[in-house]
Structures are given as structure tokens and as C-alpha cells.
Length: 119
Image 1 (cartoon, rainbow, N blue to C red):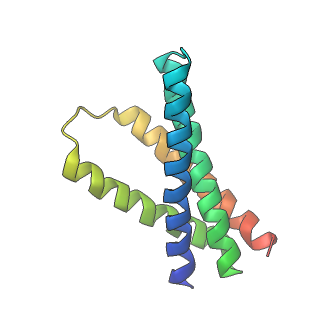
Image 2: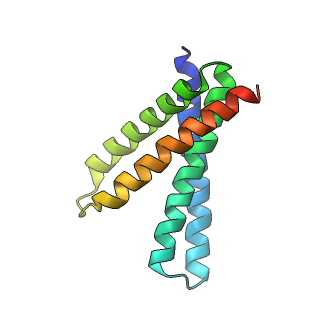
Image 3: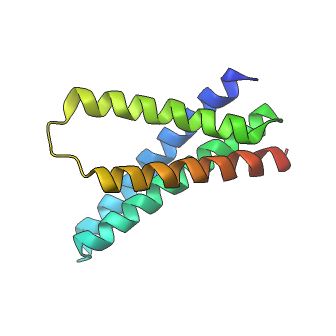
């Protein structure tokens, strides 16, 4: 198993998450979408970022895409969890958190498998 591939996938996940979040915030600023719609768009941004990051992880590894995709997701979730523990004192919406977590791991598994098949 190549740990390097999973770390690259995590970095790509963060990069896509940053870019897509900036685009989404600009879209939110200049349109009048509801906060309910924004919550679904944020879930889409998270799942897309995990899918693309795990795709890169599986592509770089060249084998065992499912494992590398999920490992990439675990690294990313741990880092995001540490950042949230350090800086956020807000109330947590645990149902939304677990829904995003499930979508993230599912997207990571699919992305890892697709990444290996495209290699």
C-alpha cells in the first residue's frame, strides 16, 4: 500500500474543497439562494472534492483504489476534525455532519476505484 498516494489524494481534496468553496461563496454573495439550498450545495462541494481527491489517490497508487480512496478520506476527515476542534465553539449539527461523512466516504470509495481503472 502506498501511503504517498493517499496523502496526495488528501491534498487534492483540500485543494478542490478550497476552490469550490470560494466559487460557492461568490455564487451565494451575488445571488439570493436560500440557506437550505446552500446546505445542499455545500454537501455537493464536499462529496465532489472527496471524489476527485480519491480519484487522484487511486490513479497514483495504480492498485487497491478502494483502500486508497477510503484512506485518503480518513486522512482528510481527521485533519478537518482537528481544525474544527481547535477553532469552532459553535453548536454542531450532528445529523448534517454524519450525512456529509457518509457521502464523503462513498464518494471516496467510488473515486478511488475509478482512479485505478483509468490508470
